[in-house]
Length: 137
Image 1: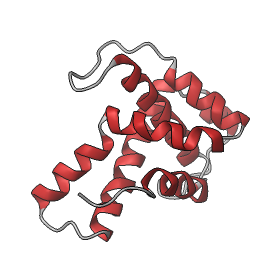
Image 2: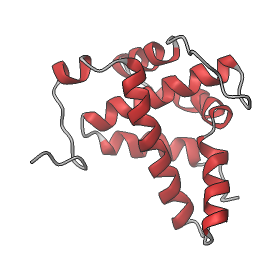
Image 3: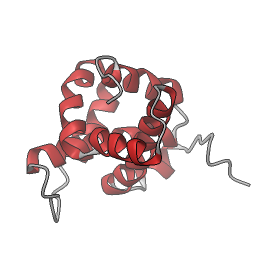
Image 4: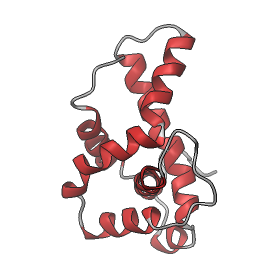
């Protein structure tokens, strides 16, 4: 049985996943991390949790986080981010610019790629940098 909470996918399996596939997975990983962060920082009501989570996982917020982590990425991580960012979106949400959406897609692809490798320490490191200046709103 595959343990989907402790993945260690091989390089060939990961390369077989499109950048959009990585971003799809990374979106879920990032949202789970945000939800955990919110719960641990005092948000209590379901409505409050949902509203706060949306603020952090929306494309503009993710795009604002990208400059904080870009200098920390190694070559392989930077390549994954750029491939995700360079995917041409079919539609852009109304609350985001095309540039925001593409940066967010790059961030999500990176988080999906790291998750598939089981690199949770690295995910935590990058997420901590993203959230270090944030206060639970």
